[in-house]
Length: 504
Ligand code: ATP
Image (cartoon, rainbow, N blue to C red; front, side, top):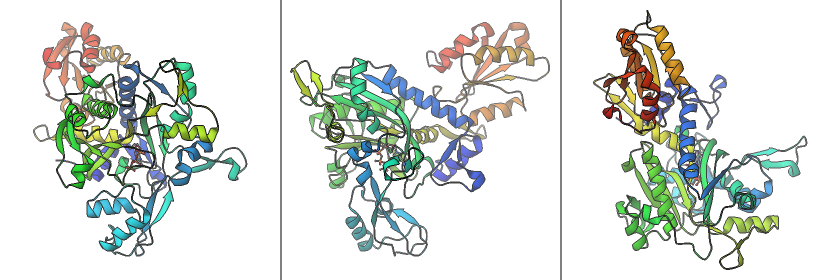
């Protein structure tokens, strides 16, 4: 059974993963608090992303930029002028809606990127109704800027006006020269960043999917402008296949099709090796952390849908209960951003190319850019299972993501607490473990299953004499005995998948 997004929100709240922010005061739409389990799960997710994209690679370095930056950054990028969505308001119930989302949900066609005029025409021609009260009488469609503003310093005026960053990407572009000059990187190379972004979304909805405060994990990958196609790593992914929904397939009403990167490049469906490489890598990242690869597809933006700066854009999408939705956008931004920042700052952001002995402005042909909160939802959905035999939910999170790696349980309190505490103390220095002696052992295991704890370590009377414990595997419920002296090492290997439970 798949949970609706509201049921998922309820589950997340009940178990302490995510709560609506400021509930005490009636809540505030589009903002969330990650609870004790959610905070750890999110942290593990972000650490895994950083490990995969930064630490395990020689060609990517990371930064942690400021949330408030010089307002000219947002003028140069175009955000201050035109980063917005088109809004309509229902004249009857006053529900405010994003016009493109209203059309996409009602008419099941892509509407992202259409002008206010075109969206309004579609609403009128198709007699699109309000999803809340069903009336079909809307105000004129008008553009709405999503940037949150604030003031820097004690005086509030136009000069002190600043923005909360709407994406992490622009901070990467504006720091490009500093990173290049101090990191000893050579083209091609990437700069990664994770952190908060803020968008004053017209209609935040679908729980964590569309928030007003969220986190992004982004990479801007810089390449030589005369060599925008050759990716030295392409062989790694040539045989990797994914469900593909190209712009042609969408326009010709064809079904998405499973295709290898090799085929996509040979047939010119994907124009550059870099795009193919990063789409495959991002899919691999999700699968490596336990996501169900068959619920993903890559979809090319339609010609009308692309951002003003993009030559070609592909999204990595996931099939949520509320439809196929974007997890990651990957645009070929060319040298648009660096050129814009050169123009507005009047500083030279070109770099010296030793090969051609010329100054060049690097291009970005693929920029894996994704939301942490949307990824969080994916992992929750793919982990959630209702186990009829056990009579409880089992959250089959990857060991790497699970917020708590094991519970340590004395079978009964009497006589066994002391040794159990010793076991807990040994393990807690290595991983996040929980000591649990409340309730029957069955109840404790069920509680652990529901919050995704992969292993249950039980100390029984035999443990006192034999100096061993049982390890219970969440997914199979099987149990194996392990010497206490070896436990820390075994657990470390299990959590990192260096060994499998079956092989113990
Ligand atoms: P959408 O079309 O869904 O509004 P977008 O194309 O504007 O998204 P990008 O600007 O490409 O999004 O941002 C990169 C990523 O940041 C998205 O793929 C998504 O995962 C995440 N993201 C963007 N907006 C939000 C939001 N309001 N809440 C949560 N995550 C978001």
